[in-house]
Length: 467
Ligand code: PHE
Image 1 (cartoon, protein in one colour):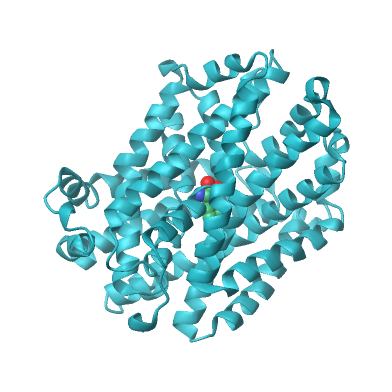
Image 2 (cartoon, protein in one colour; image 1 turned 90 degrees about the vertical axis):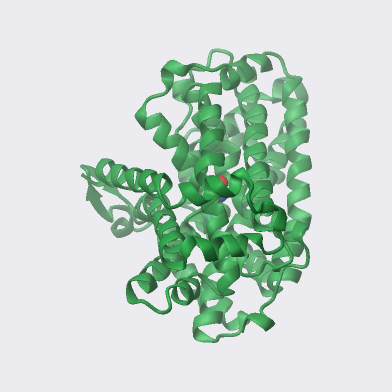
């Protein structure tokens, strides 16, 4: 098994692929909006502290457990626990979670693709009209875009780890970076841009309260793709010659920098075209921001750079977010793919075709959750709110289970695998890590307060969301 397992061709390839997973819609809009609404610099600081002191150790745990076992998440839990049933259940959860997230992330990626097509065909103005998004997501054209997105993801994953995921990341990530920096520079030259920068950066510590702090942690956790089985799986493709701590630090840094720069692109744009914008009007949901709020901003650009110019800027923005979404989608679908290959001995092709059918059916059902099919639109109700099928998947798998999965991996690594073995794995490819303060910190925190914090976030989310 392990000796034939495919590996990333280089450490850079691994870092770009993991960063490609981490950089997603959460970075482009979720983070900047959360920062602006919740105390600017004060939120940024809280976020950075969580990235470093809570998320980085969990990331190292995921990568090293995956590398040691050389398996998909279920196989990793199974190998490390020597087949204990309760750990196998935790492993199953670490495969089901990404499978379900893959379903709704497919839907969002499909919408992005559709918006890009519309903008490129000169249709920007109509996307900014009231009700445009609702009409778009209920139109049959989305099924064509779904086929296109499925084909792109299939082609990348069919290439395997090195010639598929790694190669795509090496093209998409630098492309993303240039578009992001280019847009940021452009936006910063607009009138009134500095008002946005100020809102984004000037700290207001009075805004920090328990729910903002816990929101910052959830945002960081989600943004780094933790608790999704992804870094366990990517870790299983990492060569023993490469350093886990060093790679994890770079991935966390890259993800945080991209989120930070995305804020310098987004907020100045918003304030430049809407100087009196009330920040509380910014939608909390990334979907609301991307598909209803931002098209209006792009249309407003017309007055300074004309319709073609405005469409070009909108196109670069949607392409940028689409690149970010595709690398994330690829990473999340690789998890159940690896599970079918490792646990069911399927070929990559067969695993991908199986998942294509399963995720395809569920994604179509989610896509009909916005009015096409009443049964899926009014799927259930909790905490007094009616929820669609799509909402339920987002609530349960995206917003609730991730910290639980993170908690389980901390417990597996520190109490079942044992710290000694964990540290040994961290020394592989990085002898210099031994005895550093980071080693002492990770060693202590991963078995003590990090699981307590993750348990608290999980329980709090369950209490607020469902009761
Ligand atoms: N880290 C991604 C983001 O910020 C989250 C994600 C990763 C979602 C992989 C789905 C799949 O958007």
